[in-house]
Structure formats: structure tokens, C-alpha cells
Image: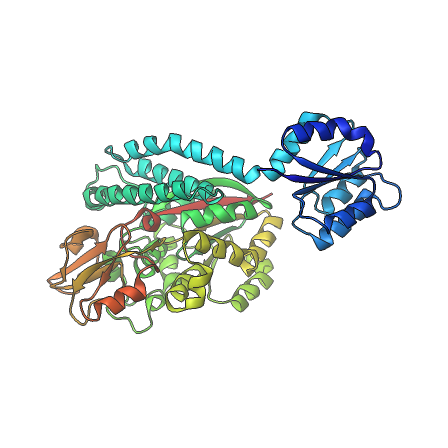
Length: 522
């Protein structure tokens, strides 16, 4: 590809060797002697980049730069100067230059700047594609071995890394290869869960991951005991590891990262089960037995999923008492809208007197449900990349970011985590159940369930999964990979409605392997 360069310098004749060098490299260079000539020329023809001398008589390079950016904001500009004075650099950078070169110029220096600006996308794509190709075989071989929970967590992190890297490139073919690899990994992961999950809950000798009901005791309470500053536990509902990675750079501008790890959500991977397990420190069947007044069955819950989590504050209070921490002063806040978030920010100075503060943010979960119901949200987030982008945009303009900035100023420690993730579902599995069967698309429980056996994790003894058993014949089934349950009645309509929506409750890396992050104010 031939690139067109506009070069403005009042001593342009002295630059002929550089212009010839670039011409021999395949670039087309148009030389002009002044800033005003540059402005006139840039309106005549489509240039790929502009070189501007900073010290020109009449209209200076900085003045020319300002006018070019006003009319052509996306046109790359490289400032060239003899001066290394700091204020000139700051003015140029503030005016959004793309690079800065100091005279005397070196031909290779010029060429490097051009490649960095003009071929950045291509070079990144080529490098990313080559690197992923080298990793592809290693990953494929790895997840076909007999792996443990930590190895699966590491594989998922690697897949997230490559997904985000390939997103920056233009190689659609390699992106398609990645989708196939991730799907294959999830199929193998589902097999791993079928073989391991019951042992994690019943075999004391089994090598098991940290799970929802252990999170507070093993990860959060130790931070409380050693804290020299208030601890804010921020749970973002339905928040995946890839979403954490896209917001991480925003937060690291003012918060230092102390821990970036993962833990496993219990099954079902839903708010009613996994989040209650976090705050109670108990598995669902234990909650039902010990606190029947707070446990709500999800059989056609009229209040929807959120109606299953009305007693998180009470569960947490009891959990602190059981761990000899009942004297710790704590607060609990559930944020359902922007006004509640702003009120919390306004009240943060009062919260700093508490050693422990819990904040639950429901926006991301609400977003996933809205995407199912609203065509506009589907258009804004048509795929995983769009969904990540929408999450990042939300955080940038949310009261949560304001809260985190205030906490950083006070040197508070912050935990950011979630109760479960989600997956974009694509393939239906037929299921038949009674009227009281719960409505979730990724898991079902009830009497005499009928379903296709493929891609379903079956639990016929709920007590082995430490799940409530409302009826003698109650069984639980969990959709694996990117499958979802659909009823035979109005099957095609149902499938068309829910295919390509974000759901949770089942077995996938995206739903079960979730972030646990510790940060502190810089």
C-alpha cells in the first residue's frame, strides 16, 4: 500500500535526502514551505499523515496543527522541531499530535514513526495472529489432558487474553478459529465438572477450588483481620473475568492492584444460589435448613430472580457472628439505579468509619436481562465484544467509578468480585417439566423432568450437590457449554426469542470461573 505524506517545513529543500529516502520506500511525499500552504493542500487531497515543522515563519507548527485537527481530527500529525523545551512538547501533546521528532532527523527514525502510526493495525494483527497460532496447539493439547481446577482457571484466563488480543486485530479467519477453540475448551470443561463437582462437595480428600460459600471466610475475613484501612467489598452481579480485564486499565490509573485471581461459583450459577452462598457462607440446602425464614424457593418466584436475595444483610451478620467477628461494624448497600449510587458516593465519608462495607451493584445483571427483552440493547451489544464495550462505557459514566476514586483518595482497600458470570447461548435442548418448574433457561429443577441427555449435567440426588429438595423426586439439570433449555410448546418461537442472549445458571467457564480482585488507593 502506498501512503501519501504532506510535509510542511520552511527549509524543505534541506530535507530532499529524507524525501528521496521515503520515495524509494514507496511513500508519496508532497512538500510545502509554510503552515498556510499545508492548510490549503490538506483540503485538496486525502493525505494519510502530515509532518509539521514546529518553527515556521508566519503560522507556526502548533497553530497549523490546531487548525488541521479542527477540520480533520483523525488525520495523524507528526511534529518536528529543533527545540526540546518541555512546554513545546506539552502544547503539542495537548493538541493531540501522534508523534514527536527532534532535529536533526534520522531516516530510520522517520520510517519507524510512519510504520508505528500508519501500519500499527496491520503489524499488531500480524504479530497477534502469529503469536496465537503458536499458542493454539499448546492450548488444544493442554485441555485434552486430565486437568485440575487451577489448570482450568489458567486456561480460561489464557483464552480471555487471546480473545481480547484478537479483538484488536482484523484477522476474521483467526477470530473464527478462536471461537471454535473456545467452544471445544468449554465442552472439555463441562466434562471436567461432571467428573469433579460432586467430589468437591462430598470428598474431604478431593482437590477442590475455592467456591462461593467459602469466599468470605477464606479471602475476605483475613483482609479484615489485618486491615489498616476500611475494606469495601464491591460485588458486581453477573460480572465475567473478561469484563474485569477491560475495566482494569481504567481502575489502575488510581488504584494499585494487589491480587488478580479467580474462584468458582457454585451450581446453579444464579443470584439466588451463588450470591446467597457468598453472604451466608453456606450451601443452599444448609441455608434452607438453618434459616428457613430467609430462604426463598425459586419455583416460579413472582418477584423474579432478585426476589430471592432479600436477606443478604441478615445472612452476612450471622456469618460474621459464626466467625467470632460479630462485633465488627459493617454496612450493606444494594445499588439498583444511578440515584442510589450517587447517594452512596455522597455518604462515603460516613462509611469510612466502618471497618467493613459491602456494596452490591446490579447494573450488569440488569443489562443482560434488558438485552434479552430490548432490541435496542441487542443492537448496542450484538456479541461478547459489544457487551464488554458496553460494560466499560457504563463504568466510565457510573457513580461506581466516582466511589472508587474517592476510596483511592482515602487509601481504602477494595475487593471487586461477583457472584457468577454468564454465557451467550446459541443451541437449544428440549425439556419437559411440570408447572412448578423454575423458569431459568440454564438450569431446571422439578419432578419427572424430561430432556435430551446430550449437553446436560444431571443431578438426581440434590443432597449430593447440597441443594434443596422440595419433593422426593426432585432432580436438577444444568445446561452445558452454550446450550439453553426450551419447551416443546411454541418451540421455534421460544428458541428464536432466546437464542443469542446472555444467560446464566449452567456449566461453562464463563459462568463458573469468576474474578476476585483486591486493590488499594495509590
